[in-house]
Length: 637
Image (cartoon, rainbow, N blue to C red):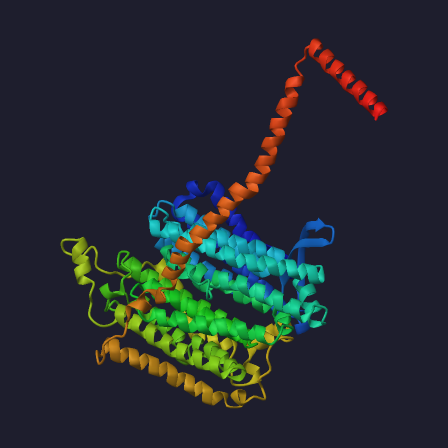
């Protein structure tokens, strides 16, 4: 199966090409069924590859599939090759697995859309690009997928581009990601200059063996982190992700919850040996940015009223937890939380899409309430996703978040405290969302009456099976997903043993620290924190014992987005215009001025070349007279 790994990205690519050629003939639901089948087939091949790797010893779980020599230019030799190892297969499993469920969900969600085939065209292209990103054997193949998911993100966020907000959000995502892409390109240039290769194996081996200077390793790591901040929505480049909710809900689930936004965490884990050789302050920078992003986004989520905006800021916050793990040397915990987050956040986004579908495109939580009675499957599965993200045992999110906090405590107590406060806020705002949407009084009667005389045709309703089946599957995974890495004994550290060959050189060792020796105490504290957040939210939003604290500045995202817009639209625009004027008037002016002068002089000379013999004879005569005069004067002098 390892030699057939090229089929994993090839199947979604084939789906993209078939829909591109025959999508209009397929129509609805044909294009959606084909796209779903191709993604599911890629999952089957990935599963076969996983079991093939699992049957081998840890030392043999590394295989390269080379298709052809892509760029053979001097010292730059880049193959279009795939690296099949535990990390890439883990990523490919949930990209294709959750991707298949989201494709199936989208068949029901996008029903009746006039651009139905085009939507699935973009989805298959996105899955192909994401698989190229995670399977790439070298930085350049990864960068090919990196740019591919960025382009698909633009297409999908602005899919309903007739709405100005969607068109603007797509452009915002595209431009912001270009800033991050600059960092990744600089990292590639530095790596090639230092090692002479872009292969992960070559770069990581050179870092581990000390062939890369510490200052160079630090530069590569920080530039990669800049790229990761763009793709994985960390401060200061997170601003595109909340606006990306303008895309259809399956887009939010696939790109901005389960796959694309995790690519930055994947890249940092892939380059873990390089991070291990940096100056000690570099991982602290990564952990600090992650922790601050987690807290910052959590405070904003507390005051949001759009059901998808709450989840968008929650995604930014959870990604911050993953970077806190990376900066703390907890690469296994980062991937663990990435996987569990893919389960419960995809569930929550698809659940919100089901609510929006049942509420006839209403997204304001203040106009919902008591929906669990009319949407029982959606309500039940959404509640499971809430318990998972809130950190309630034994749901998946509890185990992965607790492991991150354990490593954070061992690495930096201050950042651990930030993580604890963030966990408290997460339980609080997610409970708030569940109460506002599924409990309390039904506030959608007035909304239904606005749309119909009797309100019956616009009353909330449960979604079709194509939408509820993925919810049930993801709910099951959100319950049992934590079993891949349990803290009880070494024998229950399945993910750690699986990823060991990839990250063992860089993984932090905390076994002799106070945190590890008292991990059950910290685990109990995590339960208390989750319970406190849930209890406080219930007291405020269900019992009415206190007034909600939702200051306008939090609803406006600390006005950070507005500040960036003001900076770019004011001084930024003036500075860019000034640079453009300098380029046009001075740089281009100098070039054009030289050209103009040369043309003027040549114009004068051209007049002498008129084709008349008498003119040429006169010029020759003048030349003879001048030469004779010169010789005579020279002789006299």
